[in-house]
Length: 475
Image (tube, rainbow, N blue to C red; front, side, top):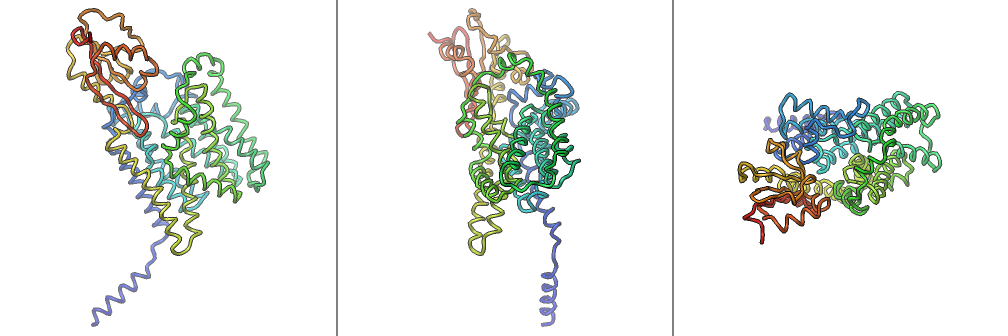
């Protein structure tokens, strides 16, 4: 009997122990970071390189990184990594994956400062499982660092404005500058910030403490000076720019639909209503995040009518969508009571399971949402004979996997084929649009030997291998 009493007393003492809140907070954050790392390192080296990745690991100049002012830090880090570790898919993607992981805590703390613990934790949870962020974390490209610098610049600017901290304005400007060095699309922060400042000036919003001429001049004046240095070389050569990027490759609807898919439909809808709620409450940070979510989207949709455009240009808006969605769910939960909180938990479950289901497709069925160049070129390597020609839609990739120089489809003239030639052709998803005549010739004169297409929702990453010789040519 006494032992039972002692056991009850021990349980009572344990029940009175309170774990400090900061331990709980950091423990949850640590779990989210571990989840993020697990997803980003899983199959990191399995997917084949695609065109842009192969370009990154080469020493070619891309027209953006030709001076120290415009030099991509991410590209330099990737090339530094493979120079010491060797060239492989894993080694080339190691830097973007690590950047993707450290983005979690770096975004968490400024978000916490603006919206509190609950919204910040849910924001980085969305980021950890985001298929879009996962994809770019597993790509030897600059997008994860671009997103990090841009998002930190935006959040730092808002904290500086709310708390009237001049040194944070300088820090925000520096972060936006680093983002612009990754890619010029980051310069869209200027119309975002300007529209935001005009809105809180004209609309019935309370003015933040830092809304003073001194601070605004400190922030805006260097932008116009440095911005000219960034843009001038391209503005002076617009003809060459439109020659390279003047091709219309998509439609406004495709941009909207693609962004909805990549951000994730439930999160985008929840975020939109979260933004509306914040605007009704005249919340200034909600206004800034809303402008940053919708203005770039509208801009790229318009741009797509006369210029090359892609959904990846809108990747920099991702954090804004997540913060708005996280705030909406947390606010709904706080303002619910009893059984009605089940509705908020249901919304949270939907927002978490939707991207997780896409992660399963990404890993198990969709080949990391990219072309399967490795499989196609392995097939060619196993079946070709000495002297066979290899004509590829992307020679950067085919040269890497075959370890020799291949022929670009852009330079190939079917009329040059003579009797006795054997040739392998690798077609990707761009050939039908850019070289329809060559594709028609392939259909009429070659034999399709292998199909390595990857289907991801409404998109098909086409990858076909064709073989030509005098015996296989149709008659």
